[in-house]
Image (cartoon, rainbow, N blue to C red; front, side, top):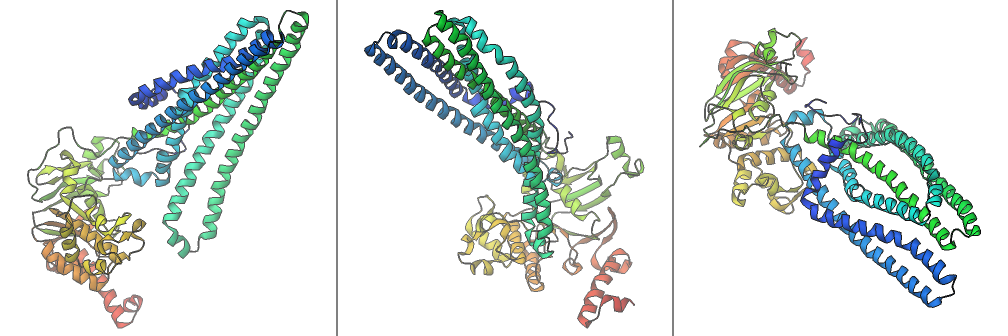
Length: 620
């Protein structure tokens, strides 16, 4: 798999991988004392498990056959004591192991979430949110099952199994060998189960991830689904995915439905062999009745850990599949990260420069191709080509052009959501790749076309975890004319914001996004179609506020409404990834080039709309 991303459908090559297991065990290192205690309790539990059948043998041979009721009472009391001890030991072992598993799960989820936050934006463009959610939820649960029911408890099963075999061989080695005669059949059944269930298990996990991805995408876009009447089609699509998941589960159930009854049959065959051979020895006087009863009980307990080991194998298989996906995610490099020795700016002035920048979302295979530009590889799809401009501190530059011209890509490079393939982007003369991303981004404020709000209060959405005082939040809201509508809300700045700001209008969310940016007092303010979702009256208010608030700050503005950028210091007109024209509003109109055509098209449509005619009529 490439570093660019991962795929849910990747096959798990092996059901057991020593490297993966050793890496998983490192998560137990901080809790080795608890694991050691749990391991000790499991050994004690295995010993107590062996006591019951042997006490039964003693009770029958020494006391029942001799008619010694007092001795029988003593053995019964001892038997009851072992049961009580087994209860206490098992309770302690389960509690310790489960608590350890919860701590490991907490550590792993925190590590995954922390790593997700370090990955660049392009990673999330290529990986559905539903699949990433599966990594943090379902896959971590599968690994937790390994820690709580697999890694440590498997030793208990092994100790119990070896102990039973040792006691049976000690009591009567011939009868023990008769009991063990069905073991080859057991291994044949287990091997069939292991091979068959592995593929079905992988299918189940794959379809769970697809269900998560489908639900996340469709629930997020429910308004579009309902608007375009896609409920029935989406229901059919979900039914198909759900059916595939159900079919995969049915296949897995088939293997379980065959395996466990087969184990029960083999256990019954073993008991039958004990009764046939051992019963004959009892009749011949070479074996006591108590020993025969103890053998039957040991035989029943002998198959239980073997059956448990098969179940542990399935848990191990699930954990290996889940851990491979988790570690693939954790091993995905953070392509945009802090350098080993980042350069820090003592005081950010806000000078932004793009110096011969080439950029593609599909980067060239080699640095040589990047250095050669688009001439060496005609098939290379460059998004930006030889971009060169400078924004001096306190100046305002606007980017205009058709959709897909590369305007937003310029912003993504400045904020280091992506890195350039050739050239460099600088802030105050320092390449942004040499800076710590935290300092770089704290110097910038970005207001996007689609304002994203989080669950919480109005104030927390403006503050975003920073220690911004309440008064500064209110000042920022007043500056962007958001204060009046916030105060009109039921709890003012303490009003709860639902998920993604669903209870607020698009314009209100946009105003809050403005307030958020301005409250953080950035040296560079970036507006990406920031006024596209507000009405004309609100836009006019924002324009008035920006005249004051942009004073002393560097500003880069992306806008389709040319009326909003007429007073900037320079306008860059982009076309197919290049800067084709540059100048002030009046200078560009005088050139009668791309900008002039954009201006004519935009205002012609407005004039036509005002006259009540269609653009097609005027064009004709």
